[in-house]
Length: 366
Image 1 (spheres, rainbow, N blue to C red):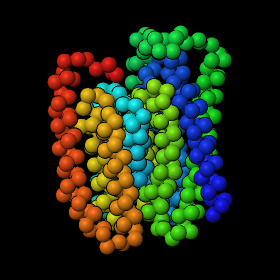
Image 2: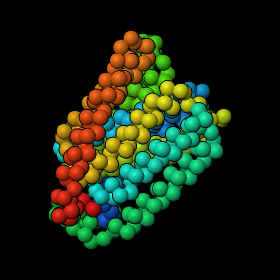
Image 3: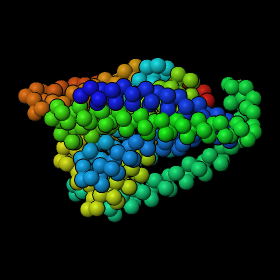
Image 4: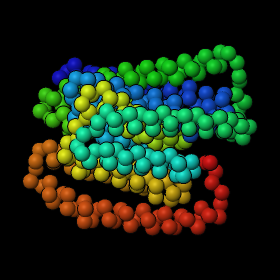
């Protein structure tokens, strides 16, 4: 147990160091290339911080631990939106680029729905994985195309106003690429140490693989996204913080689950509890991003509290479900009858109130 706790602490420290290095290198690289921070967040940062999910899920599928692989991705996507965006918004309200509202969030909703569709037969087959993987490649190529379109003087002048003139030279490129490489390696190493310690503790307590995947492993492999988004928020890189989460969720479904289903032989079995509860929660969380992102083109602190509060409720439900607790039914009815409807009404009212304001003023974070 002592070794596991030491692994948790050391892993958390490496995650913070890696996140700082990755954000520093990625933001400067965006300035050098004239690419908007949003595209950097959706690609380099998002895919890099999702490397732990890929490593853990593929390793789990190869060793026959499909529940951990599936729970890792589903739980990570829920954690990314509710906890990472929630905590980041509590630090500072997060501006939302309109590309996210018009394109990337709808894609996140679409691929979440596609995963539910593939899961109806309770098996994510290798053929489903091929479709998901092809979708991931197409989405990435589209982002690369977008980045070429956005390589213009306006983006560069935005950086120069914020950071001053950006020196361009051989060593500048080397240094910033080194920051990104060191950040990615440190994030992956720290995440593996954290997950190893967390799983050892959980198994000693007799927790099921599925619950471990949905909670501890999911949170552990999402720590790179958490650390990166929070550091980006502190540094004023809101586009990287939000783009990191949305890009990671899309990457997790299309690429991580795509590769996992291909390496698992017969496919990934979908437990009934995941099909009827966890997957719908993941889809609902993705859909909830649309009204929140639309409300003033910013994720406010009170919306951050809503996100964090819902993750706490989700975690409590998982614990009660795992323990088969007598209060599980009452807790579920309270959530369905009171908390969720009140939240939906509040979000709709906030979105409607912000609509005239949006119509009168141009969006700055395009």
